[in-house]
Length: 181
Image (tube, rainbow, N blue to C red):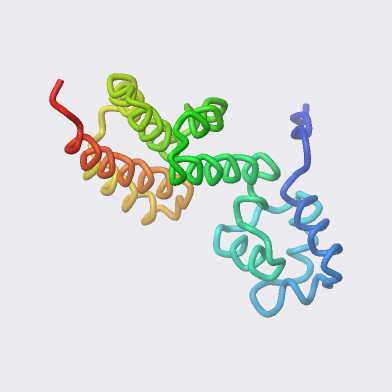
C-alpha cells in the first residue's frame, strides 16, 4: 500500500509554481547543472534533488532554500524570528516574547532568542531554563557535531548544531552580564 500524499504543497509543486511564475523553461532552470528531465521528475515529486541541486534551483528561481524545502511554514518561522529580533532591538521584549511563544520549542535559534527576550524582561531564571532546553551538549560539542553533519552532507543537521553552538556561546556572554543569583 502506498503512503498517503503529504499534506499541503510539495517541494515539486513549489518548484513548478515558481518556475512558471517567473516564466522560465525547464532548460533555463536546469542549465548545465542537471537535465531538464531530472527537473521535470523533481517537479512531479518522482525524484529528490540533492542539497547542492536544491541550492542551484533556489538560486535560479530567486527563492529562499527554506521555502523550497519547508514551504510557507519555513518562511513564517523566519518572519516570526525577524520580527522578534526587531522587537528586541527596539527594546520591546514583551512583544518579542509574544512573537516567539508559538515557535519557542522548535529549535536552538528560537530557544536562544526566547531566552534573550526573557532576560530582557527581567525573568532571568526562566531565561536559564529556556537555555537548558537545548540539551546536555555544550557549544563546542555542537560545533563538532555540526562538522560531522557537514562531512555527511547533512546540511540541515549541521545548521541546527551551528545554531545551537552560537546560541550557547551567546548565552554564556549574556549570563556573564547577569547579577549573581
